[in-house]
Length: 124
Image (cartoon, rainbow, N blue to C red; front, side, top):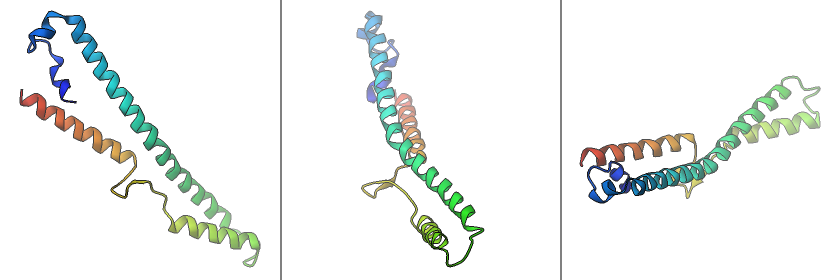
């Protein structure tokens, strides 16, 4: 990540002599960022979609529970148990119980990287 600082060829005489080498280095760094960003999204998006699907399921079950045929109907009893299960057990994924994997984690990571790069560029 520290090699992003060397994007401008004016400071490095070796890169100033070979613009092709500079373009290759920048393109490799961009590909590296896209690759790892894609991998991060491939982990985070299914976790987010699972939470959204659970919320949708909770809404559907609550609509089904509004008009049961009878309180002692086996379907009404099962819907009540399922609704309580959905209500009390919130789905969340965590990395070794250190952080919850969600879309806000991606925003936090991007903010940290941006702050790091701004500080590095200001210190040059």
